[in-house]
Amino acid sequence: MEIAYIPSPSHGVLHLGPIPLRGYAFCIIIGVFLAVWLGNKRWIARGGRTGTVADIAVWAVPFGLVGGRLYHVITDYELYFSAGRDWVDAFKIWQGGLGIWGAIALGALGAWIGCRRRGIPLPAWADAVAPGIAFAQACGRWGNWFNQELYGKPTDVPWALHITSSTDGRVPGYYHPTFLYESLWCVGVGFLVIWADRRFKLGHGRAFALYVAAYCVGRGWIEYMRVDDAHHILGLRLNDWTALLVFLLAVLYFVLSARLRPGREEIVEPGAGEDAPTEGDDTASAEDRTEGETGDKAADRTGEGGSGADGGSGDGTDGDSVDLGKDSVTESAESAKPAESAKPSESAAAAPESEEDTENGSDTGSVARDEAGSAKKG
Image 1 (cartoon, rainbow, N blue to C red):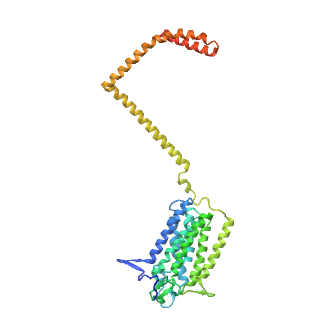
Image 2: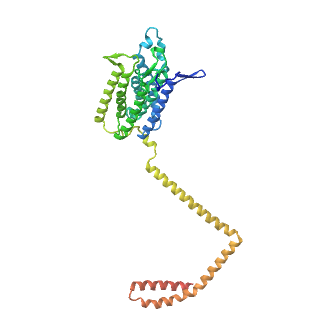
Image 3: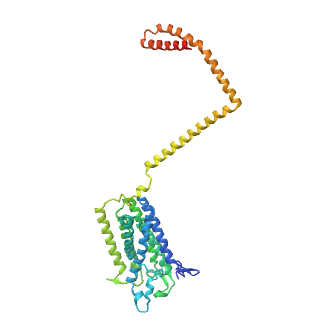
C-alpha cells in the first residue's frame, strides 16, 4: 500500500438541487477567465483598448470548444460510433474530451473573424493572449483529475495518482499523474513567454509561436507516458506525431517572422491612442486648473475687501475713524504749504554749485522751476 499519493475525487460532479456542477466545466471556465484577464492587461500595455481581448474571445472561445471536441471525436471515433456506443455522447462535452490541437486551430479561426471585425492584426492579439492560454491549459488539466482520466503508467512515486474508478476500462491503482505534469509544464511555458516577450520584445506572432513550440516539447514526453487508448503510427502515439509537426511549424514561423518582420508592432489597435489623453493635454489641464484656482482666490480676496469697505460706512465708529483720517490729511496738506513755498530759493541757491555737471544742473533747475510754479499756484 502506498503511504503518500494524490487521491482522486470520489465524484466529478456536485448537484445544487437539479443543477449539476461539474468539476471539468469549472476548470475550463476558470481557465478562460484567466486567459482573458491576463490577455487584456497585456493588450492594454501594448497600446490597445480595454475590452478588445474579451470582445474577440467571444468569437475565439466557442470556436475553440467546437474545434477541441471535433478533434477528440475524430481521433477517438470508436468511443462514440463503434458497436454498443451511443453517438449522442459525442455532444456531451462536460464528460471530458477536448483536443488542444483542434481547440487552437479552430479557436484561431474564430479569433481571426473577431480581429477582422475590429480591424486589428491577429498576430498582435495572439501575442497578447499567448501566456494566458498556457495558464488556461494548466487550469483545464485539473478537469482530467475530476474525471479520473489521462493518467500515465503505473508507479510507486510519492506523488502517484490513486485511480479508484473501474468504468470505461480503468484499472484501479497508482499511476503517474500526467495531468499534473502537463499542468505544471503549462505554467512554466506561460512564464517563459512572459519573460521572453519582455526581454526580446517579441512581436508579429512570435510570442504565440514560442508558446506553441514550448508546449509541444512538453506534450511530447508527457504523451509518451500515458496509457489510455490511442492510435499509433510507427510505434508513436498520434498526439506525439501531431506535437512534432506543430513544433516544426511553430519554429519555422518564428524564424521566418524574425527575418521578414523584425521588432514589434508600434500600433496594435488603430485609434486606441486617441482615446487616452496625452501628456501635453494633462499638463495643459493642470495649468488651467491652477489658473482657475488662482483667479477664484483673487476674486474672493477682492470680494472680502469690498465687503469690508461697505461694512465700514455703515458702522458709527468706523465712520468717525474715516472722518478723523480726513481731518488729518487736511491738516497735513496745510502744514506742507510753507515748506513748498521755501523750495524755490533753495533750488536757486543750489543751481550754481552744480555747474560742473551741466546735465545734472539743468535737470535740477527744471525741477526747481516746476516746484516754484506749483507753489505759486497753491
